[in-house]
Length: 329
Picture (cartoon, rainbow, N blue to C red):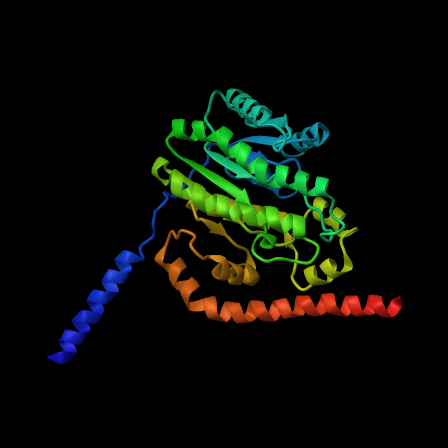
């Protein structure tokens, strides 16, 4: 008799917990992206360009690319859509400079695509300086905040009215694994990428009633022309730390971002390091499945131990390099 009573209590508690810990929202999966208007910032090269390529050629979406360099935009259009220009709109605008300019560009984009509202916004534009705090100028910090953070704010505000008109929407914030863990030489970059998560969590709570869902992507080092160029001048400590993890391809990153966007997942992580960082930094972020919550709860302790070991490696690299420099002097 007591066994039956205890079993009933356990089952009752299980279902109560299941109810209390249920996903706070359940986005509908966007299976068909054909003719869906997607705006991609920073889409003339790297991850953004690959996102545009896949959305155009594999999903038949209508794409707008916003970027600063007109020459790169022209080359991008010729490369990914030489015979499909009616589905690709390329506009030159500095997303971090003026909200009025961004708003005007979004209006032009909607008109170009037959007055289609923006259904998906992928905030991918960003700049990257790999320098120590002392070597990074105040102007460098301001420029990075403008593009990496305010650019996201301006583009998101400019697209919200269009999404509400459509009755739904997806907003993607492309952060970085450097938006989850601080790294030597990334003081300016990490701070702007960390800021995106706070923006995303608050934004999602405000927009869920409008059927608009936010995704934050945390790609690791990605094989792009921009990363290759920056690697030439980054501090040796930063290079050695980066070498402890691999480099992923832009097509792989773009593919997973698109899948996560379709699902409406709040987080988009990459590889085992990405999973561990996701578990550790999940904090008070929303969940979209019970499985997601269970995996985070079960692995967070182990993830903390592994990440501390990784941090010890990073600090050892910095210490060894510092000792070597002192001996050289």
